[in-house]
Image (cartoon, rainbow, N blue to C red; front, side, top):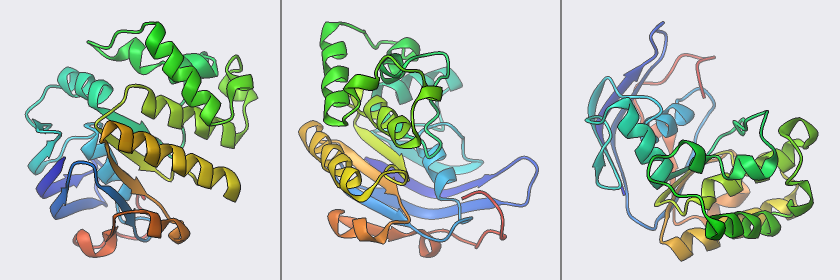
Length: 227
């Protein structure tokens, strides 16, 4: 599902360069990524989603060469094949929760919004316990409710790859377990791969494999740079 080799990426203003010699993740695997803040874990997820483009190296995701795509092609690929759970949720303020869940169908070329998709969105919302919040806009939702909306949005397209950046970080322990169950169950149904950045080491036994990002990347990033 993921094959990254000799990736190098630096932010335009300098001060931080991410280098990943090799990263491979098999289809259907559930992989957790741990490591200190500032080592580039979120940057790696952005590269894998095509939100950022490596300066050099090779990157294949779901058999697609992300580096060889145009911006429009990467955007369409991301909408079809990748579910991204952002650490800051990245909800659209002027849309209500239900519309935010369905947002990939607004922007994804080739994605068709129909009654089956709407039913799937409602089923996901019910599983996340936010059915009664679907008419609310993000500003009227708690942090945990916004996070659950973001998780539903990542799953609604039935993606091949789920990238999660602290997907359960704002949830209480009971809700956290329920959401993780939902995430893993849906991924299993779709034979989707999960790559999740987390600082919660209590969750690690639930994953097939744990990658310590500090040992994966090189060299170390300066303190205070992006997580």
